[in-house]
Image 1: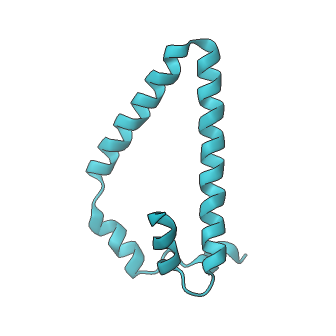
Image 2: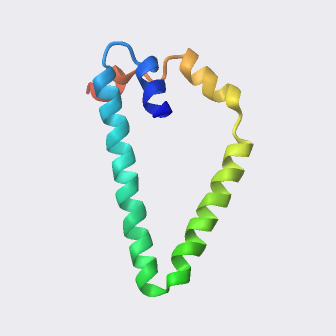
Image 3: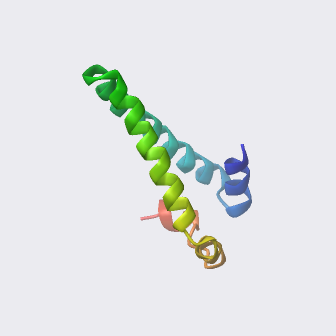
Length: 88
């Protein structure tokens, strides 16, 4: 995927760890989303669809309001250095 390729290019020394951390976070988010959708589905089927629509619209608004230069500055400042995340 493109995200994994971006992470691969971003971190040079510990590429495997960077991809592993990415997979950990996406896996946790998938699990959380499935649990929330399942709970909403048992309450009322429409709640799950309404909730996913609200999340989609709010993320589009957030994406529109986010300044792309801010993300580029994070990369330039090397804030994504995986060694700072993994070492204690």
